[in-house]
Amino acid sequence: MEIHIAHYLIVAGILFSIGLVGVVVRRNAIVVLMCLELMLNAANLVFVAFARMHGNMQGRIFVFFAITVAAAEAAVMLAIIIAVYRQRETVNTDDMDIMQG
Amino acid sequence: MEPIFHDLLAAGGGHAVAFYACSAVTIAAAILMVMKKNPVASVMWLVLSFIGLAGIYVTLQSYFIAVIQVLVYAGAIMVLFLFVIMLLNLRREDIAKMELPKVPFAGVIAAILFFVSVFLVIKASTPAFEKPVDALLGEPALAGDSVRAIGIPLFSQWLLPFEITSVLLLAAIVGAVALTKKKL
Image (tube, rainbow over all chains, first blue to last red; front, side, top):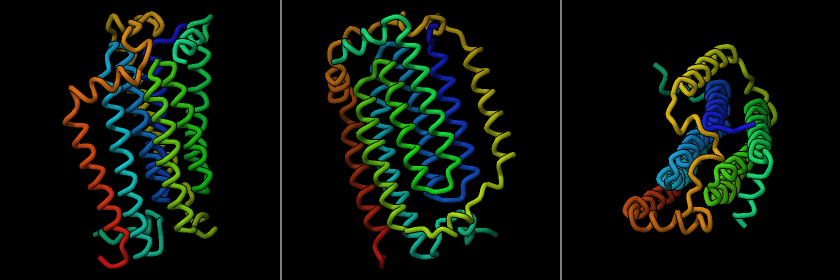
């Protein structure tokens, strides 16, 4: 059994697809955000796999920055969810339809 | 520490076993994360998924990334999620309302996306793609200390992005505090 870079890319594809299904299917805004994090991690896995393939550090440094940005993004998104919950008493995405035409 | 990992992975298909085990844990936990109705259970499965992903990073010899995956993602970020879920204190009927109605549509889109990506992976062929991971360049700079190998370019070549990141984090802190204030 030999592991190729393609194996890692396929795992990343599976994780990204699961995350996408979660974003579309789930109605809890917090769980939608968690599925977004999963998709982000699938992209990170591709970066690390290609960094391994080319034997350089750039991909890993990019993942380092991506994790930092993800932390900032999660903090702001959760603050938005708390603000919405204060206003409308819900985190259900189907109830957040005030912008609907 | 790291050479031990390296020898373990190289010994008799250890790499393949570690890869398949970590991948199975990661994917199974991710599926359970999407399927669980209770958001607290979802967080716990996502933590397990991220720990499995850290194991996959170890098989790619990215030890530093594996460590910050566990510390920052599975630790800090998921605790933040858990904290917000506890803070909002969703009632049981709120959770029950969040059923899963759009499954066929989402499944079709995800399946198409997945097969397109697999097709592109199989179609792409460069010389490095044909080689198994164990046979790729061993990265001599990485073998001894990967923190050093990631730190030197980070503080020389990538110093400006690194400093900009600190400004971004400051903006995120200020934004989060401003958003959650009762009166803006």
